[in-house]
Figure 1 (tube, rainbow, N blue to C red):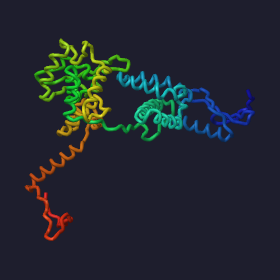
Figure 2 (figure 1 turned 60 degrees about the horizontal axis):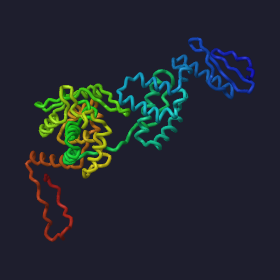
Figure 3 (figure 1 turned 180 degrees about the vertical axis):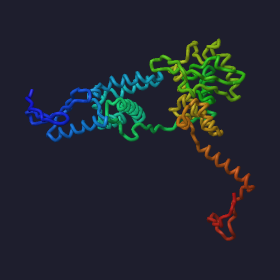
Length: 399
């Protein structure tokens, strides 16, 4: 190793020059531990400037031990997920995003070594490889992990600084007509017909339907009590537990036209006993997402006008759209949907062109009723005006 020249005395830290001509710097932190500059400097002035900045950080309390940020990102990310206490489906999603999209690039890098330039290059590559939606989800996860690293004082600043990179510009969910819902329900067959009705007209999530039990159903009140959910993970296992949020614990009242379908389904297809599942497969086992999905896709293909990307979850969107068009308030929708935020509820509201025409007609009727004006007849052209010629008349108060 090259011999070092004697150190230069300083008030804070020390500077030395190697035989190569480059300079290095060192200092002691408030605990007496020695730290060296992570790289050498071309000039003595550069080394002095670096020491001055370190001293300023120590004085202001902004100094971060460089050794703490050297933990591999893969280890820090794994601990981050384990400490979150996530719902099973969210935990599965985060681990999949990490494994497939984040760790291949950042896994072996130290947390402190991840720079904004690295994040920009990685994000651009993900958008090309996976599309905007998956790239946005992966970016949000990386940003959240690095934000915690900032709070833990492993790094000074989050390197995820791309504006809009975490936003998803997903297309609006399709909406089925009432006729299409009924046709889809009939095509699904007697066992699954009522599940389609509940997806649309009770706006229930698939995981809530999977855990619905006979004790939760009140035939006389025509109501359902929702308190648990049983999402199916990619492994095929079900993670039964509380609903997605506290707001998900609710009572759903069904419209009267579902009275007979409800009683028929409970008598013919639900398991016996208070703990009996409301929806089970032909062989008596809890319904599987894969099996149900195949039936749903076959039925969907036979319904005129339903797009190929129409999913069972879109029935929930359809039901909430119908409720909104009937005048349900945002709070009404939030309670029925089991949503705790207005932002989530707004996603499911969909103003169709037909609804806009209906609103205009309703406003027209109300104003005419209030003012006493009737609908005016089309004006007759003045004498001598050629047929089809535009007629200009003074503005009058006609409604």
